[in-house]
Length: 435
View 1 (tube, rainbow, N blue to C red):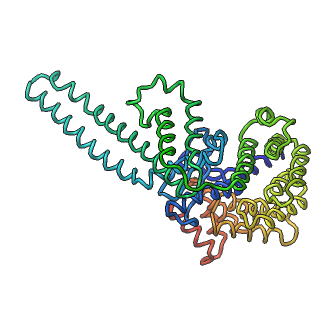
View 2 (cartoon, one colour):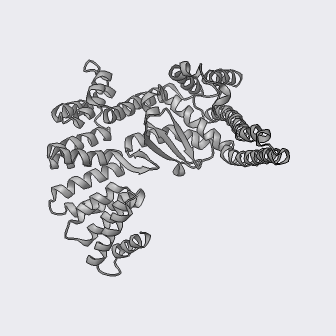
View 3 (cartoon, rainbow, N blue to C red):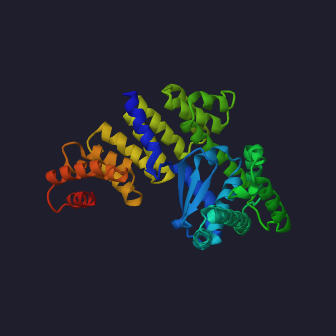
């Protein structure tokens, strides 16, 4: 029973696997990061409703922006970076690449360098043929790819320097603290300084961290910010950031490591949050419930503490209490898709009159905004095994997860059980065609 529950809760936390990396779905963290990044998006001319944050489960100290609107932030960055302003700086740097048109420039430069390499290679072959001696052109031929590589490396380093400056400018236009860049590079220097001392700076595609730190310090000194966030905003963001980090660490790290990082003597909200999550994961449900009870006592209007309480009560098997906790979370925080899906699962399992219909309705609401595998999985449970629509929902579940064979198998089964012309019958047919 415990193993089944743990797998289900893991599905709550993890989203679809994309390009080999797991995307974490967590409403609290996504909303916090969206609020943090929104001023940068505004300053860059990106409409807020088009800015989308993705949390990538990866230990790398990294982030990137795709298409100018999709911001991917790695958990390794979130759990290690020291301040919200530093997170903004990393994203501002990545947006700087977009503002500078670096992706298009890189593609054009690669085309130029490929042509250049081909000319050098042709010259090498020509020498071999003309001289009748392969050794005459071998050196030129062997060096052609190296010339292109070195040129591309230099070009990339220049773009990184430019993206740093554009990122600082973006932070200032957004009224945010550009000194976050200094925090990032100081931390990077602590992490990579010893290794970089042994690296040939012409053999890497980024400038050395010490150089970048010097450059941004000088750039900010010459172009001081005209406005900064007020102290109240800075303090609020910092407190929220500590809770977000604690939540990630509580879910991602082993219990022992969480307890080392957040010992019992630490009575901060972030520490209690991390320990409560880790205790829940480890099956120490009573300790987890005591912890979340303390948090709710301190902040009775925080919807995510009630979400965690709903998770804990579900694991206890207290379905009524779990439903009440999730409903309170939705009342306080709005229609958060992750919490709606969690409530739908508990309702489907409790199965009082009307519960399954409500579970299906909740999942439909989630799917209209952001289809997730888990929403379809819970919807299938809401329909029940005797309803052909459950086969269609499972087909969609497997389709999103990239399992075309299982998607087609369930879609065919759905078509056999559903009436022709119904929406689910038609959608199942589309999945069969895709296979």
